[in-house]
Image 1 (cartoon, rainbow, N blue to C red):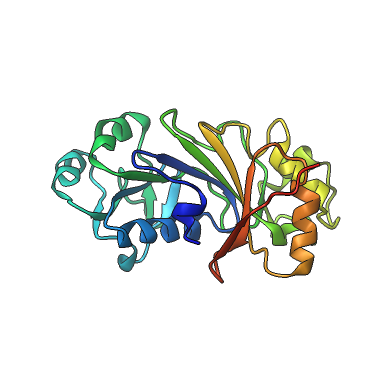
Image 2 (image 1 turned 180 degrees about the vertical axis):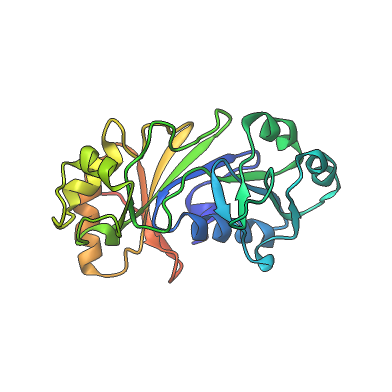
Length: 241
């Protein structure tokens, strides 16, 4: 099943994607599906993301002054837009006002609203994630392969904050309980979700991954979808106590 159908997206949705362990891949997989359907899609960020490969988009705009005009002219396909490009070749954020000004020109808006420096686990600062108020769906991406990793700054973004959030110690093995706390804690992944909140567990590819998924998600009161972006299969997690 396509991601568009699994997540029940509808025209006019503004989707903020947060979390760690596959956000960017998820975003552009979704954008590509919508492009194949002939839709007009805006892809942006409220943080900073590396510039995507050219085959991921049809139009690129990094000048706010030109964005409205370019949005009107694009008839279909994917527009990647930002307020500029950093010295690290990262696309810079669009703000709430800019998104509001152009949203009616797009069928769907996809926003990467979090950063994890390509690490599978994260602790969040007070100003993270950056989810705009017009968001209709917040999709939180979780890498199930974070379970079993050794806790250190090389595997976890904002390591000290992750320790405070989960109670884990340096060098300890990450358990399903730690990942649950990362998701549901007061300062965790879902603290700033807007609209419908959906959890997507990525890299669920073998029996151990399924067992870890059950241990993490069994009584989280949110819609939970799991699967593999690599192998392109997705299922809804139906097990509830």
